[in-house]
Length: 303
Image 1 (spheres, rainbow, N blue to C red):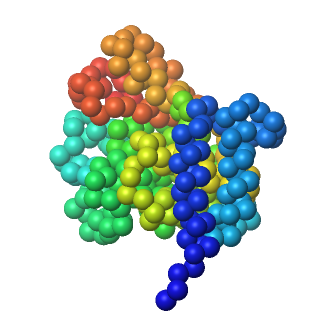
Image 2 (cartoon, helix red, strand yellow; image 1 turned 135 degrees about the vertical axis):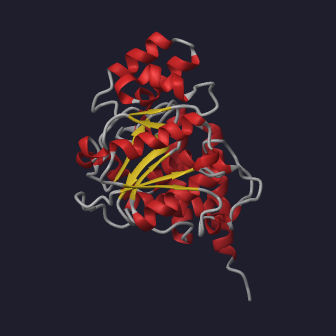
């Protein structure tokens, strides 16, 4: 069989362009900014790579072209997915506490905590490099589950402070939701909500699969986030849908983690007491010396 060298060259270029873009880009990119082609040098480099990718990568079908952006918004499956590779029973105490808050505050939702031993989970990792750790394996798992079943993915170290029914349903205009702008990235992936086969979720999964098909090297710890941004840069429909997602800043959802890292329990208590519909969750770091007793003391009525 004679290989299609034009496709091979295009696929090689696509991976090179993505890697070059990650190296050259040092600033966050506002996807709603219309005049990005006339912005400063990092933005101009992104625009140039976008035009190259549209001309070379897309015809080679490196990833599929996304469909027209129309998503229903009223049928989010009432399903919550979590993952701890060694199993919930073997997770640190604070992780077990966080998982419990999702069950306690969402009684009408099905809460499933998966592990590496859960039947069917290992198949999602078969095509990934063996050197990848649990965090990057979970990057693929979360998208595959949401694309197939829909619902909510949350990391096991995320604290639920408000019921999902109280704040999430009204934010599903694009069939997808994620918190935005954690430092230099367009979104966080520790909390995602999606309809089954939603355009953004399926497209992100396709981009992730295409990346790992062509390399076994982890270019950057946050490569999964940058693949989403690359998709929005090179797929106009994805960019349009992402613009419809209501903005909630991820850094506000990590205020408790920052306060605990600075050993400022008074500040941590203030964060908890100020929890509203605009701050419905808090992302913690499971490696911090934060016990269940600390949680009960700090969280008060939220524990």
